[in-house]
Length: 368
Image 1 (tube, rainbow, N blue to C red):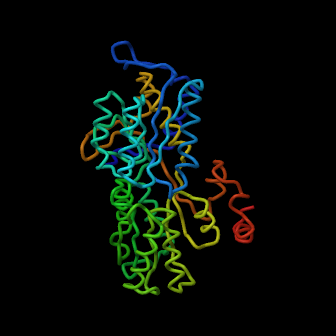
Image 2: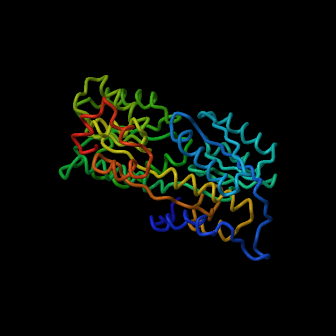
Image 3: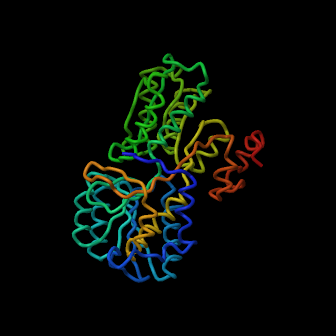
């Protein structure tokens, strides 16, 4: 689905539009959309609570940015489906009935929500697919460069295995939920790096991204392959990496193989510090969330120049071509760059990471 991977410089430039006054720009009278004032209602539908990012970063940042862009007159109506697709369908219908001005949709089931997207369209409510590419007539899409996420995971896993890695090295893949289109892109990106260089000995698509499901899958893989024959584990996100680690420890593995992750959750950063998890993928949630708020307000207020500036990429979904999009860049998070990423960006403090349990491990890698 990816067409263009934007540069970090371009990402920074678009995120600074508000500060430059671009969000007050509109097209000429012939091209400008019908506009609304500052009393906008942005519906925000987030998919689950297992990943702490949604409540800790996405919602509060979007809420704060909408308030800033609307002089505290706009509001965010937030609902979380807790990984229940039918609940999200009901939540979206409620927002349609209540006539939200625009909906930011992070779909539990990108295919199953398509009918609700069409209902919103028929009701004149724009829908921006947020973080996951929903099907149906969406107006725009905003996410991280998901294929790049998988590529970074796969490439970093190979680096951890060393220059001698070959097809004698057996890898277990614990992928994300089959209802999440991002999971497919992560897997494709990872396979583009891993195929032909190592052997994928077992692979799973993990229902609802749940750590306990990943733990059960890893236990099954250990039974099939043998705990001493697993050279590395591709875990698609940090929560599932935690489940993988539990299964390996339960099987009596004391020297853990390199394990990937994604999202730079605090528990995962601490596991990286201690050496239990090799890497995560750091994605700047503030960048993504701020851009989502900017896109939503610009769309509702008919500020077409600003909206177009924020959506210079194009992606295709199974139901729609050339969707205006923004793809945000990502980077590998390892022991080497914790301070330069999550600490420098204010995601966590050193005190958050280096609790008494991890203080010695932090000191050993110069994290103090």
